[in-house]
Image (cartoon, rainbow, N blue to C red; front, side):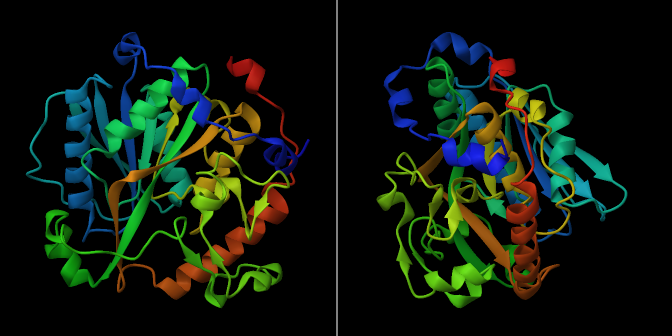
Length: 330
């Protein structure tokens, strides 16, 4: 079977797994590695690490993990200034360095395959997570493990467009009373600028409320598509968490996606199609995406790269034959 055929056959009904109460015994087994791919995001990286450190400390206090690490993978650029960030008990901060730019897929793989932690979170260098976000994600993984299943959990974002100078001065606390742009997965008025292929033109002008109409992804259409999207495309690379062993067993991210767009989707699709992992959104945490408008890459450049990656993902990647690894992982 092709990966696309496996994804169409995938059943994402995860809510029944939440009936089980997490076993307190599992807390002694779970450790967490947070991987942050970094490329010239100097204006936001410091606050990204501080927010992750705070969120990991809260998860440790709640007893859902007993150790956390934050791994910043510097992808072919100058090292970020993380000096002065205080050490926290049971939270390790480390950096790894690619001497040439290999792309976010390779940077994420460096963090994924360099860790022995039970869970791996991927957080972009311009995302400031909610203080309770790590706890909430890990708690879902606890429940899924107790129910004999596995999950890919992902967070939502409010997006703030700011200049590079503004971003340097901002902290998460500064935006406490502000409201950013709404996440498209909650409400999307589909515009021409969002089209990635000719078929997408049919959706221009339509309003989508994805979570409402799919029961928070539990009732994804059986034909595999909701509007212009397949289910793995609901998980963006800005913030998501996976079981490390399963992610490594399917080969991690496809590093041939070395430009912006769909590099995260390659891992999500393989986990869903080959291991049966459920895709679970966490809607009750306020994660902030700081979109630096005069940053290293313009929005127009990103949109063009996204379209190219979309075509490669749908026309090439999903058409590949993949061996089902679900039995091997049980």
